[in-house]
Length: 229
Image: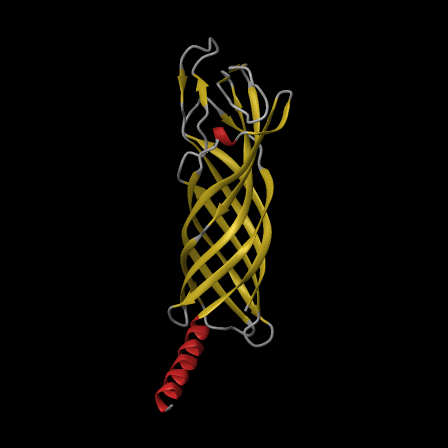
Protein backbone atom coordinates (compact mmCIF):
# COMPACT_ATOMS: atom_id res chain seq x y z
CA UNK A 1 0.00 0.00 0.00
CA UNK A 2 2.77 2.41 0.96
CA UNK A 3 4.69 1.49 -2.20
CA UNK A 4 1.63 2.24 -4.34
CA UNK A 5 1.18 5.59 -2.60
CA UNK A 6 4.82 6.47 -3.23
CA UNK A 7 4.46 5.58 -6.94
CA UNK A 8 1.29 7.68 -7.25
CA UNK A 9 2.93 10.67 -5.55
CA UNK A 10 5.98 10.29 -7.82
CA UNK A 11 3.81 10.18 -10.95
CA UNK A 12 1.80 13.25 -9.88
CA UNK A 13 4.98 15.22 -9.18
CA UNK A 14 6.52 14.08 -12.48
CA UNK A 15 3.44 15.12 -14.44
CA UNK A 16 3.39 18.48 -12.66
CA UNK A 17 7.05 19.10 -13.51
CA UNK A 18 6.45 17.99 -17.11
CA UNK A 19 3.41 20.30 -17.36
CA UNK A 20 5.54 23.21 -16.19
CA UNK A 21 8.10 22.47 -18.90
CA UNK A 22 5.61 22.06 -21.75
CA UNK A 23 3.26 24.64 -23.25
CA UNK A 24 1.36 24.76 -26.48
CA UNK A 25 -1.62 26.12 -28.33
CA UNK A 26 -3.41 26.82 -31.58
CA UNK A 27 -2.89 29.50 -34.21
CA UNK A 28 -4.08 30.80 -37.55
CA UNK A 29 -2.75 33.39 -39.94
CA UNK A 30 -1.97 34.65 -43.41
CA UNK A 31 0.93 33.98 -45.78
CA UNK A 32 2.65 35.81 -48.62
CA UNK A 33 4.58 33.42 -50.87
CA UNK A 34 6.60 33.63 -54.07
CA UNK A 35 8.88 31.57 -56.30
CA UNK A 36 12.60 32.00 -56.90
CA UNK A 37 14.93 30.14 -59.24
CA UNK A 38 18.54 29.64 -60.31
CA UNK A 39 17.64 29.79 -64.02
CA UNK A 40 17.09 32.55 -66.56
CA UNK A 41 14.74 30.24 -68.46
CA UNK A 42 11.78 31.16 -66.26
CA UNK A 43 10.56 34.40 -64.73
CA UNK A 44 8.97 34.32 -61.24
CA UNK A 45 6.19 36.88 -61.03
CA UNK A 46 3.26 37.49 -58.68
CA UNK A 47 3.07 36.98 -54.93
CA UNK A 48 0.34 34.64 -53.69
CA UNK A 49 -1.81 35.47 -50.66
CA UNK A 50 -2.62 32.34 -48.66
CA UNK A 51 -3.35 31.09 -45.17
CA UNK A 52 -1.95 28.84 -42.48
CA UNK A 53 -3.29 27.23 -39.31
CA UNK A 54 -2.19 24.58 -36.87
CA UNK A 55 -0.76 23.84 -33.43
CA UNK A 56 2.54 24.48 -31.65
CA UNK A 57 4.27 22.79 -28.71
CA UNK A 58 7.19 24.26 -26.73
CA UNK A 59 9.44 22.14 -24.50
CA UNK A 60 10.98 24.68 -22.14
CA UNK A 61 14.64 23.76 -21.61
CA UNK A 62 15.29 26.77 -19.34
CA UNK A 63 13.36 29.93 -18.46
CA UNK A 64 14.69 31.58 -21.62
CA UNK A 65 15.14 28.76 -24.15
CA UNK A 66 12.75 26.19 -25.59
CA UNK A 67 12.66 23.49 -28.23
CA UNK A 68 9.63 24.19 -30.42
CA UNK A 69 7.66 21.80 -32.60
CA UNK A 70 4.59 22.53 -34.71
CA UNK A 71 2.22 21.09 -37.24
CA UNK A 72 0.37 23.29 -39.69
CA UNK A 73 -1.46 23.33 -42.98
CA UNK A 74 0.22 25.84 -45.27
CA UNK A 75 -1.50 27.27 -48.36
CA UNK A 76 1.25 28.67 -50.54
CA UNK A 77 2.44 29.05 -54.13
CA UNK A 78 3.25 31.80 -56.60
CA UNK A 79 3.41 32.28 -60.34
CA UNK A 80 6.02 32.14 -63.08
CA UNK A 81 6.27 32.87 -66.79
CA UNK A 82 8.06 30.33 -69.01
CA UNK A 83 9.42 32.27 -72.03
CA UNK A 84 10.30 29.15 -74.07
CA UNK A 85 7.36 26.97 -73.03
CA UNK A 86 7.12 23.69 -71.07
CA UNK A 87 7.44 20.01 -71.89
CA UNK A 88 4.91 17.41 -70.68
CA UNK A 89 3.18 19.41 -67.96
CA UNK A 90 0.70 16.85 -66.56
CA UNK A 91 -2.71 17.33 -64.94
CA UNK A 92 -4.64 14.59 -63.14
CA UNK A 93 -8.06 15.05 -64.73
CA UNK A 94 -7.36 16.82 -68.03
CA UNK A 95 -5.26 15.89 -71.06
CA UNK A 96 -2.72 18.67 -71.57
CA UNK A 97 -0.80 19.09 -74.86
CA UNK A 98 2.70 17.63 -74.67
CA UNK A 99 4.26 21.02 -75.41
CA UNK A 100 2.97 24.23 -73.85
CA UNK A 101 3.66 27.36 -75.92
CA UNK A 102 6.17 30.12 -75.31
CA UNK A 103 5.32 32.67 -72.60
CA UNK A 104 3.03 30.27 -70.76
CA UNK A 105 2.28 31.68 -67.31
CA UNK A 106 1.43 29.25 -64.50
CA UNK A 107 -0.16 30.20 -61.19
CA UNK A 108 0.46 27.60 -58.47
CA UNK A 109 -1.93 27.04 -55.56
CA UNK A 110 -0.26 24.51 -53.27
CA UNK A 111 -1.14 22.97 -49.92
CA UNK A 112 1.47 21.42 -47.63
CA UNK A 113 1.39 19.69 -44.28
CA UNK A 114 4.34 21.37 -42.55
CA UNK A 115 6.16 20.27 -39.38
CA UNK A 116 8.38 23.17 -38.26
CA UNK A 117 11.06 22.42 -35.64
CA UNK A 118 13.47 24.83 -34.04
CA UNK A 119 14.88 26.68 -31.05
CA UNK A 120 13.16 29.62 -29.37
CA UNK A 121 14.94 32.23 -27.24
CA UNK A 122 12.67 34.23 -24.90
CA UNK A 123 13.10 37.30 -22.72
CA UNK A 124 11.95 37.48 -19.14
CA UNK A 125 8.44 38.85 -18.71
CA UNK A 126 8.32 42.64 -19.18
CA UNK A 127 5.00 43.83 -17.82
CA UNK A 128 2.60 41.28 -19.35
CA UNK A 129 4.81 40.61 -22.38
CA UNK A 130 7.53 38.16 -23.34
CA UNK A 131 9.42 38.66 -26.61
CA UNK A 132 11.17 35.88 -28.48
CA UNK A 133 13.20 34.91 -31.54
CA UNK A 134 12.97 31.54 -33.24
CA UNK A 135 14.95 29.70 -35.93
CA UNK A 136 14.83 26.20 -37.40
CA UNK A 137 13.74 24.06 -40.33
CA UNK A 138 10.38 23.13 -41.82
CA UNK A 139 9.91 19.73 -43.50
CA UNK A 140 6.75 19.67 -45.63
CA UNK A 141 4.60 17.03 -47.32
CA UNK A 142 2.58 17.92 -50.40
CA UNK A 143 -1.19 17.79 -50.14
CA UNK A 144 -3.48 18.80 -53.04
CA UNK A 145 -1.71 20.96 -55.63
CA UNK A 146 -3.44 23.04 -58.30
CA UNK A 147 -2.30 25.20 -61.19
CA UNK A 148 -3.96 27.62 -63.60
CA UNK A 149 -2.51 28.42 -67.05
CA UNK A 150 -3.96 29.45 -70.41
CA UNK A 151 -7.47 28.07 -70.76
CA UNK A 152 -6.97 25.66 -67.85
CA UNK A 153 -8.19 26.68 -64.39
CA UNK A 154 -7.42 25.01 -61.05
CA UNK A 155 -6.09 21.81 -62.58
CA UNK A 156 -4.87 19.20 -60.07
CA UNK A 157 -1.15 18.80 -60.79
CA UNK A 158 0.17 16.55 -58.01
CA UNK A 159 2.34 14.73 -60.58
CA UNK A 160 4.27 17.94 -61.21
CA UNK A 161 4.92 18.77 -57.54
CA UNK A 162 7.47 16.91 -55.42
CA UNK A 163 5.99 15.03 -52.46
CA UNK A 164 8.63 16.31 -49.99
CA UNK A 165 9.85 19.86 -49.51
CA UNK A 166 12.08 21.60 -46.99
CA UNK A 167 12.66 25.17 -45.88
CA UNK A 168 14.63 27.06 -43.24
CA UNK A 169 12.93 29.67 -41.12
CA UNK A 170 13.66 32.60 -38.85
CA UNK A 171 11.25 34.87 -37.06
CA UNK A 172 10.08 36.41 -33.85
CA UNK A 173 7.08 37.43 -31.86
CA UNK A 174 5.53 38.24 -28.53
CA UNK A 175 3.37 36.52 -25.92
CA UNK A 176 0.87 38.54 -23.87
CA UNK A 177 -0.15 37.05 -20.52
CA UNK A 178 -3.90 36.86 -19.89
CA UNK A 179 -4.86 34.63 -16.93
CA UNK A 180 -2.68 31.93 -15.37
CA UNK A 181 -0.73 30.20 -18.15
CA UNK A 182 -3.03 31.48 -20.92
CA UNK A 183 -1.29 33.81 -23.36
CA UNK A 184 -1.92 35.49 -26.70
CA UNK A 185 0.77 34.95 -29.35
CA UNK A 186 1.65 37.15 -32.31
CA UNK A 187 4.46 35.91 -34.56
CA UNK A 188 5.98 36.70 -37.95
CA UNK A 189 8.25 34.16 -39.68
CA UNK A 190 10.22 34.12 -42.93
CA UNK A 191 10.72 30.72 -44.57
CA UNK A 192 13.26 30.26 -47.36
CA UNK A 193 12.98 27.27 -49.68
CA UNK A 194 15.86 24.77 -49.79
CA UNK A 195 14.57 22.08 -52.17
CA UNK A 196 13.13 22.16 -55.66
CA UNK A 197 9.34 22.12 -55.28
CA UNK A 198 8.43 20.86 -58.78
CA UNK A 199 9.40 18.35 -61.48
CA UNK A 200 8.59 20.61 -64.43
CA UNK A 201 10.85 20.50 -67.47
CA UNK A 202 11.15 23.61 -69.62
CA UNK A 203 12.57 24.35 -73.06
CA UNK A 204 15.88 26.20 -73.37
CA UNK A 205 14.90 28.04 -76.58
CA UNK A 206 11.75 29.02 -78.51
CA UNK A 207 12.43 26.21 -81.02
CA UNK A 208 11.32 23.84 -78.21
CA UNK A 209 13.94 21.14 -78.78
CA UNK A 210 16.17 20.85 -75.71
CA UNK A 211 14.75 20.73 -72.18
CA UNK A 212 16.20 21.39 -68.71
CA UNK A 213 14.98 21.05 -65.15
CA UNK A 214 15.84 24.27 -63.27
CA UNK A 215 15.76 24.51 -59.49
CA UNK A 216 12.73 26.49 -58.31
CA UNK A 217 11.87 27.03 -54.65
CA UNK A 218 9.02 28.54 -52.65
CA UNK A 219 9.62 31.29 -50.10
CA UNK A 220 7.04 32.78 -47.77
CA UNK A 221 6.36 35.16 -44.93
CA UNK A 222 3.59 34.19 -42.54
CA UNK A 223 1.91 36.15 -39.77
CA UNK A 224 0.32 34.05 -37.02
CA UNK A 225 -2.07 34.88 -34.20
CA UNK A 226 -2.69 32.24 -31.57
CA UNK A 227 -3.56 31.31 -28.03
CA UNK A 228 -1.20 29.36 -25.79
CA UNK A 229 -1.85 27.38 -22.62
